[in-house]
Image (tube, rainbow, N blue to C red; front, side):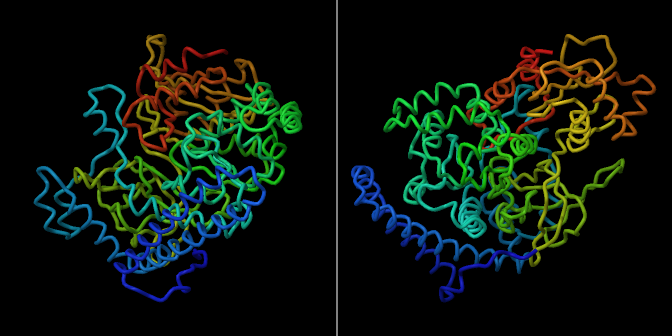
Length: 551
């Protein structure tokens, strides 16, 4: 898998310590320069003569970014060429930060000893034990350091190479309070000429600022599900937003732009983004578990014809893989060779027993599937994340992967183990047979979680949010169960024997999944990006959707 051309050849080789000191010095000088310039620009923005200031800021900012990215390219090249050494350093980093009863291990970096002393644990089990049956608090961010910085710097450079115009002044805007860039650099974003107002705390203000700028080439959002909510809100509140733009709230009145917004909304959701921003080229969101459905809905409707790019894949609140290939349509990621310490647990298709022995990244085989295992530095825990990757290739000694599913999102009322990817395939197949329907979101619940279905055979309760279909006939509901039987022989056998009842499908109203995400995000320790669950394990979360059933 070829890596995009690097820039480090522009600079003479230096030691890592010297390069780090120079980088810190350059960033400090840049900060001291740009902050007063940004203030002057804000105060004098009404004068055309200050356009040179914006251009100067942009060039200086990109110079610093290119310099820093060149340093990161060089480090990445070295680490992927020497995977054994890189992982040994990552393990040493984890052991040095260990606390608690396992701290005697910090003096040893032997991988065999490390594996023998620390058993594998599952994140879901640990959270359940800690939470006492309540909604578990997601793992706090542990890896906000160099991995996040590297993903941001290399992602920006890769995006600019693939789409040279999207990061020009005034060409990009973020429409959510969260950024898709793991290290967003708010002050640097202003220097780069982002349309989004710095420090905004109102999502409506962000959307209005983007709508006032018809020349956008890149649209950013924290995650795909957040962007889906933005477009749904835009359709619901379009008249009010157009009125605000026409009245000059905020900024100068733009009645012509308000008329364009009204006309674009009248033509429906399909292709709306390109009608609002005719020069738009790419949508940037941060990838994480449970985002595929939202991406598919956006591609099919509002963002039809646009490319999607995620600078990284995040899990448990931290970066675990880098995306260096914006031109790839279905997300190829380079597993991070540095910290955190990552292992691969082979996934045995159809096997009764799970693998217990892990592999290092350099031992991955193309075409195989593995579950990611990360070591938590604070508690020194080897944690099975549940995220499953398919190895699509390699760069140097480092595996290039696609994320396929999460092992924690499994339906099993009689031991049938319907995985996230298998269920999504069946649901997509069924929705394709519902005339005019487009799937926006879905979640599943095992019937034992809901009191209202006691006495019936165990089955799945499936909640779907659709576009283009207001009611579900019994014939359409039955199609999902037939599709599940086609994709899972075990499920079909259980249905034939009557051990499992037919899956029950419920249509929820618009905003139901937005309310679910608000419930999930209400916990102070909730990481970003929040992984969207497809199988709900807690009754009060299932009831959020149950209360919003319309058909």
